[in-house]
Amino acid sequence: MISRFASFLTLLTGDAQADRVVPPTGFTARLTLFASGAMAFLAVFALALSLATGRLAEQWGDALAQSSTIRVSAPEGQVDQQVIAVMDVLRTTPGIADARVLTDEEQRALLEPWFGPDLPLDTLPIPRLIEVIEEGDGYDAEGLRQRLAGEAPGAVLDDHTRWRDPLVRAAKRLRGLGAISILLITLTTAAMITLAANAALAANAQVIHVLRLVGARDSYIAGAFVRRFTLRALIGASVGMIVGMIAILLLPSADIGGQFLTGLGFQGWHWALPFAIPLLAAIVAFAATRAAANSTLRELT
Picture 1 (cartoon, rainbow, N blue to C red):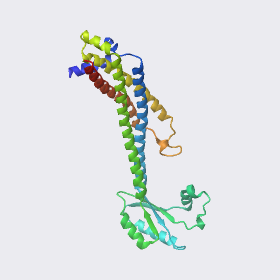
Picture 2: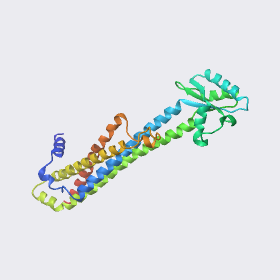
Picture 3: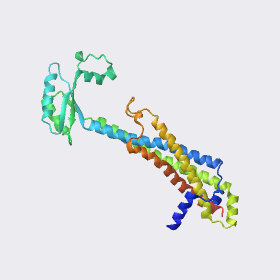
Picture 4: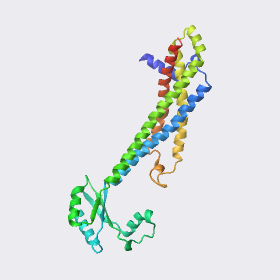
């Protein structure tokens, strides 16, 4: 435990002599900074996508789960009678909080995106729509269908299951893709930092040989590489995270033009989650550099 604390303290404070082993600038430094920054930038968007699709799945599920629609189609002169019969059935059905017949203006607004604003509802045999709002655990859909078939043969119940389930499944799959993207970004960051660390170790092979001749241990040499690359990854990922959050802030709000692509972002305490990305990048860099350094030093023995 004491040795681990000492290693962590050395990682924070550094060692001026050991730091000379790792070139402060050059290809490996630029590669580490760029890779960690770019991956952190992408991780912010992957995280935002995962959270946004999670919210979307909940919104779609909640919006459609507690509502149903009854479509009444009947010969001319029987529509009003069947609508009254349907309303009587709904009043005595457990699990239904409210039910109302949509007005002509509301039905015209629903059909306007497909047929235009001048749809003559009074001259077309358009079914009457009844909105049903559930309460508690909802109602028995099959039982309600049987009652409607007896009281109002022209009434068809749509409980939105066929619409809700595919939408929720699609949103959940998108959320899963966001999580997979974060995992792939993490693995890519580890691979890039490993390549940079191996390149730095190979470029300093002669220096490492001299350090060994004067009594430096491999753990001392590896610690210098681990600290330098961990700090580079932390700095690069912090910059990438900040740029990514600024880009998220510049996206249109969810109130403009829709609820999906314009709703991509963070809400509430989720804004704190991106700040974990630089820490994750530092941990990945620490583990990757440590493994690469130990492996390369064994090969240079």
